[in-house]
Length: 103
Ligand SMILES: [Zn+2]
Image (cartoon, rainbow, N blue to C red; front, side, top):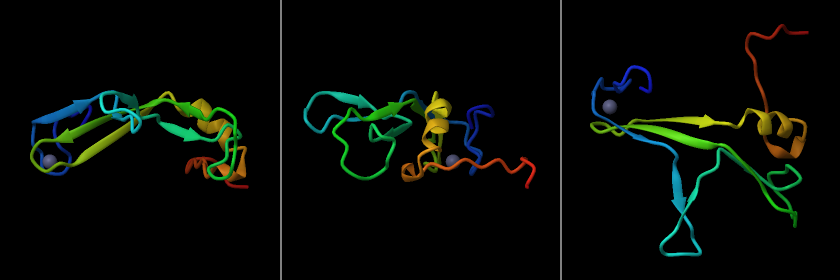
């Protein structure tokens, strides 16, 4: 949809474009926060107790069809942090390359 400017499900040409995607700040009635592309504990873990500052990176862009509501999400500026997280088995982040030669 980002390149065709048409819904890939119903071919509707009327789309909403939102960039960046925000979410409400649950501690405030009148502020919003950036929805990061990836969030993990400072250690890189997905679960556990970690008192350090959390890791956040990237942002999301979405395209929404006005007719059927189909939504495409695109993540930006996340590859470097995701590559780092793949080294931590507790991160829940895994990388796949279907074109990579198998051993
Ligand atoms: Zn549609």
